[in-house]
Length: 425
Image 1 (cartoon, rainbow, N blue to C red):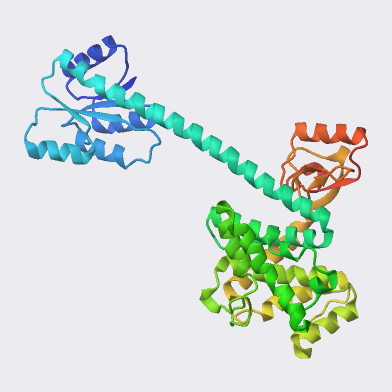
Image 2 (cartoon, rainbow, N blue to C red):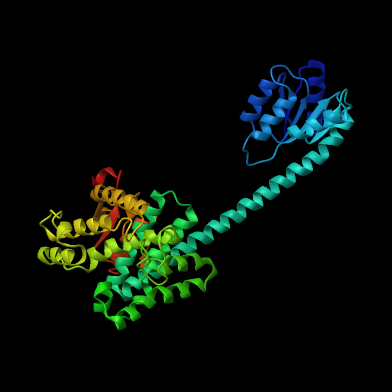
């Protein structure tokens, strides 16, 4: 055990050191409270034996400072003192003292008091080690869980490429907006999963219905379409760990002004998690489902948002115009269809992503570098999932990719993020 001894009397300090070393422990000595505090901060101390009365800072103050520290391990404190009144004992215990040894002390008494101290310290170390092991296993399970979700998303992309790619983009951007809003990690995770699968119940419906504007649907079409949020939420709510995801999906078609479905919720009645999915999904719905034609984009914008609003569109190239139209649509929906705070954060994130786009590129497998991050999942030629989006490439992964390419099971370029990778700039 590493035992810190704080005692200003040289004779007593010498006796303490001799007694403790004889019992087989390592001693760290200090002759005043301030030095003891500095040594405690510097060394890995298991037990402290301190006099009550010390120069510079007292033993009681030293105890209080130690207990105020946010340490992962527990330090057992024994107070040496001639004080023995009930009020003194109460003051000591309130300061964080674990045990008292009366002065002048007998070496055998001190060694006896060290026995329970060592048992507690050893037990605490064992508990901490087991806790760390459990946390490690929990983290491994969480990583496996997220990996499984990403694989399922990639499989959905294979089954329904248009809808799958659209939802992957919604999941990715929704996660970033949620992080920008400072939401807690668990909620961010739920929002990402909800984005990846929010329209999963549309799989199997006619493509023309999926792409159709809600206001243009007849009564029968809307009845079929509107069921998808309920079907998906029931599916997710049946899995305890994913029940929060089901609630997000259920409400992602609710509108801020109360005109949405399935419940007609309004304003703060709509969870902010669902509001994020609502705005992001509408943004990508325009980009992914509107025709890539300048005149048709303008026509559809007029039909949905009015001629006056369409006059603000400036771009002429369809690739740029459709993104401008999507941003404008989200801006027009603030406090009507969407929460204004969500709109603000989404617009800032979109602006940031435009800047970050220059750090994304399709790279030949032979040109991959350690530290690059996959921006799209990687699939083998036979359609099997290989690597998920977000994977950070290391030498082992790159070597494996090259080997798979040489076996002609993988071909083409890989879409990566390469910021700070000098060789790619």
